Length: 295
Image 1: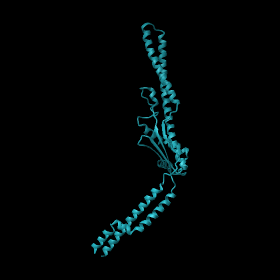
Image 2: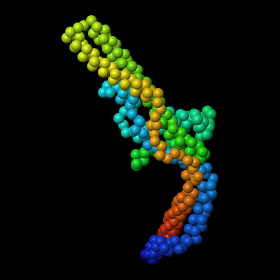
Image 3: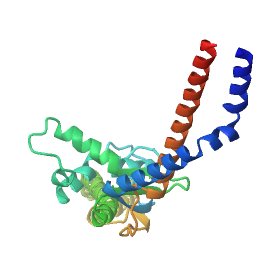
Image 4: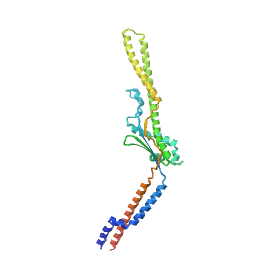
């Protein structure tokens, strides 16, 4: 008798086609219920909208201290890392995030209540969740911002790119000013040396005068070179250059990015059906085992 029960269990319960036919109504009912419930839940979830900026680092990301020629300087604006990584670091920096926090009043926007025990930690978690800056496979930088307000998402994404460019300009000008001071100091030294040679030359004659005149010509040439570098550094300290090349600016999203109702409904329905199949399968096995034991 036990052998007959086991054979029937193998034939019926493990035969998936027969199994689903026997429980067809249960699967249909559960599937419809899961689809309706997940659709309703997706309607209750507040949607998020996403805006994207695509940009490249400009070739202007360079060191103002190159004006010093071969001289190694402490005023290097950046190291020798890849320009794209530098740009990503600036966009993800605290300066950019603090700018967004103040401009868009993100404390209130993200509903961080007064008296929150760890407001900065909560703010960082919110920004990490909604603000993203990554490198694409094409070497560009992608800024993605999600927000429940589609206008906020668009404006913040564009402002992240713009603010990064401003930071690069500020750093470049700061470095250029330090370079300008250094070149100005070297220029003054060279100018005093040339004047000293000129004064000395008036009291010399003959071969000594010729030798000093040749030296004076060399020093005057170097003084002219220093004057040119000084003017370049002065111009660099005053100008504003684009350090990012924006390929695609953010636009206001027309459709929500989250939740995606169709995917949510499909995944929820599939999960419920799989769970139901597992429960029914186990229930049948337990039922047949008990019947087997009674025999």
